[in-house]
Image (cartoon, rainbow, N blue to C red; front, side, top):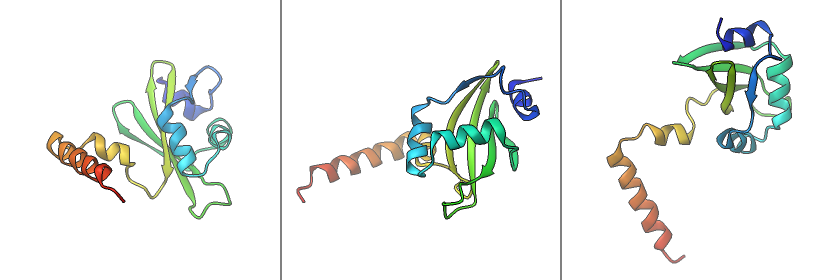
Length: 125
């Protein structure tokens, strides 16, 4: 049984959790979510759904807080050994984050984007 199976069965106390991923914390802020809300969902709520994304990454869907204009949040988890690292959090209708989009861009496209941003930064407004 892998660590994600333990999580699904509710055996969360023996899992080594990492809630300190900088990207995860930034995405919490961008979506106006509190870290405590997500931790409470993970530790105490039954997921609405879950899926294996690739290799050792899984997406778990929970209800969003009532004050949000979207219904669900999607938490991406990376599992390794007996540890789960929270990679990112997004609205469930988002398919990828900007960081993930940049990660899969070709080197040529990254270079073009870098030049464009450099040119914009040199402009005097």
